[in-house]
Amino acid sequence: MSTSRFSSFKTDSIGREEWIFGGLGLLLVIDLLALPWFSFSIGPFSASLTATDAPDGWLAILAVLAAVAAIADLGVERLSPGTALPSIRGSRSETRLVLAGLAALMVVLKFLFHIHFNLFGFGFWAAIVLAAGFVFVARRLHAAG
Image 1 (cartoon, one colour):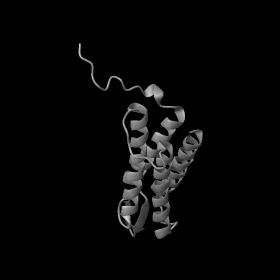
Image 2 (tube, helix red, strand yellow):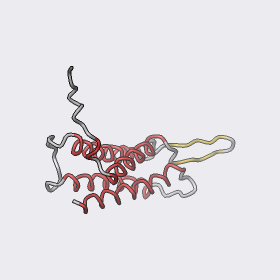
Image 3 (cartoon, one colour):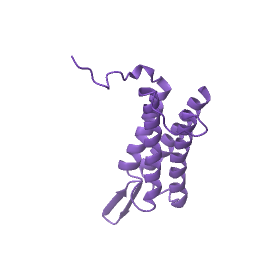
Image 4 (spheres, helix red, strand yellow):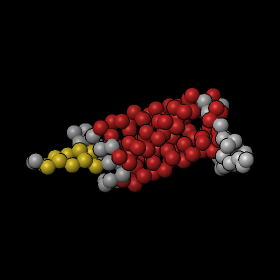
C-alpha cells in the first residue's frame, strides 16, 4: 500500500482564529473579484463594476495578491512546518500582519481615490468590513505569538 506525500498534512494544527483569518481573507478575495463595487444607472440602463474593474483596478489586484499571499503563508506554516519561507523580521505572523495591512491599505486607497457614496455597491461595504476584520484577526494572531 502506497502513501501519498500529502497524507501527513493535518488540519488539526490550524487554530480557530487561524481558520477565521483564512476565511476572512478568502471572502475578501471573492469580494474584490466578484461582488459589485460601483453601481450606476443612466436612464433605463444600469451597470455594476467589481473592484478589479476600472477605475484603478490595480489597487484591488494588489489587495487580492496580498490576501492570497497571507493565506498561503499561513497554510504553508501550518501544513508544512519544515518549509522555509521569507519572513519580515524573522516572524511569519508579522509577515501575515503586514500582508493583511497591505490588502486593507489597497482597499482604503481605492475608496479614497473614488469617493462617491451614492455609487458604492454592496461589494465595497462588505470589503471594508472584511478588510478591517482581516487586519484585526492578523493583529490578534501576531500578538498571541
